[in-house]
Length: 118
Image (tube, one colour):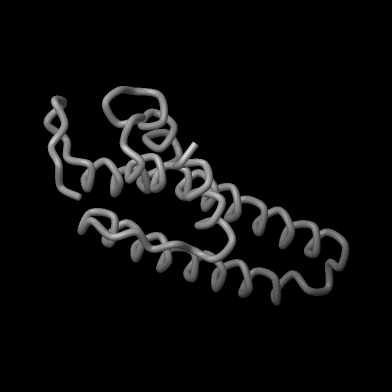
């Protein structure tokens, strides 16, 4: 999936860059020629869903921390562990997207596939 677009950016590169932050993912869904590539759309949607899931997990940990102040040290360690896991997953999908592979993450991968094929 290394077809080069008129923009000079290959689909693989665009798919990988979609994971840098949520902003390139949104841009790739709007800007031609990337919006017409199901490969780029898949990675853009998966990136958006991934960052949303990461934020939701952070909110849930914060809620637990606020409800039970005695577990502050536990939730701080948990927070760091969760961030590490999310970061490792992010690096894996980032590298695989640059190499032309679709790694479908549980739950959000299926959602991204549905959105990409609309």
